Image (spheres, rainbow, N blue to C red):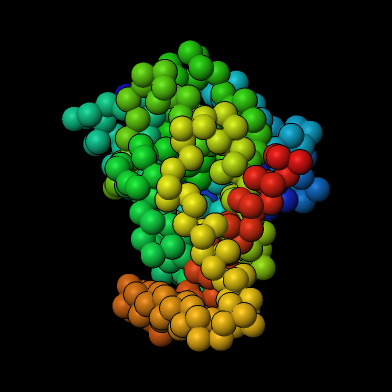
Length: 320
């Protein structure tokens, strides 16, 4: 039976880890170990790990802060399993997650895989709105959660990312610790000839950020990370990645349009409002909630605008 090593880097989030470990205790497939890497946290989670140590095969390590990529590398070094699965600490894992992965491998083995994320019914309306902003084709252009999309090949992300021991032994781990480290690693795995796909059934519940302010900071960082990935792999910068930049420049230009040629500015503002109305309608229908639909409007605006601002900042900084 295949043994999985679950790698969880964590930084100052003991409460999140507690909820994640609760969900892992409920797994129908039990052949796994858990490796928690405390990445220089001030709010340590050793007591949380101890709480779950009787129910789970769990190991805890503390290291100086070095970022999530290098924390995962530390976990890889300590892992004894055949397959390494990475989860972010703000995840909740459905009870049949590993059962579904095993079932998929019965008919198609993968050297590496990723899975989609979803919003749990217990999440706040803001978290559900943020989930919509990160997964809707209106905001991300279908680049997440599909094997084929406008952004090119599917690249597993670190919140839900499995690799075989063979991949690790051949390629090593992460070579950058932040700024798109998971996409860089995914591209390297694909270019080495390993078989990589999305397993649609292997989804997790992903809490992401709990406030729009935190979400803005995260998406600004994601925009910067896309430029960083381009530095390693220039061909991986696709047309779809410029959509948030175009949106950001369009929004910033509206006041100027109104000053120079008012009718054009009013038309542009109407286009923006129509787009936001479409987001509201789409999210309300998808989430069956008027409140989530309303909150999806600012969340989606932030998703595009913050990403675009981060993209532009990093691109300009790279030229200076």
